[in-house]
Length: 327
Ligand code: SF4
Image (tube, rainbow, N blue to C red):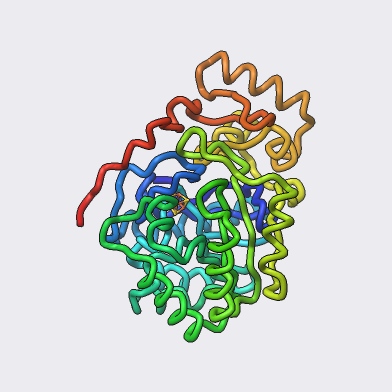
């Protein structure tokens, strides 16, 4: 299992070296908007998917070859990182080895009611859990969670973590058209956010092909309206990729392309920016790889995307539920 990827173009963080300790696609949710496709193992059981030593070895190997190859380290995966049982031990070791590199954890926040999960995150520099709804029916429709979960417990977990954590605490609100974008629901989310008092609220919507076909994000104008509801909470709309070129990889172009799209679809423009190659050169490489059957290209909302798999495989129009691993 390869545990390091990128640096990748992150809409939230610029250039970030990804750390992935989860077997794809293992998650406590099966979100309709997930850009990594449908969850295949829906679970709340924490596991050691990969040994801590292997992750540290992969990081060491990467920085030996690319001493300034990342601005930040980000736990982000095609799955939920807090399902990794030794996450606290790994974060502690990484902070000892790379104290100057900010370490960020993107999480769906669903396991924060577990004191062990909260403790394991305390040494991270920034933790970004999600809170997209305050209502249980919308929670089920949007996230299609493991059946043992409910939104009230998740909100309690977020509140407990906020009290204990001393790092930078952001909350992401993912907004999906027709599901959680009603003003009344957003007001309810706002009330919870007022209690949580995060350092920043990251307003997000769908900009990549989602797990379920037909699920849509909001227009820029609608996102501006949503932002007004969250006024006073240091809310900002997350744009498309804003980072500079992700220099530093020694892999050749084809391998770098595959590495980028192995976890989620990527638009050709952000790919060119991330890989620091002219669009023409990238197009040639993509055409060759497409002919060889190594990737697929398609359009989503007027933008060209590249993926390992095509949308007909990622996007299940019937919203087929993921296999439930255990209860
Ligand atoms: S969006 Fe995140 S929380 Fe939702 S299914 Fe995908 S990986 Fe899991």
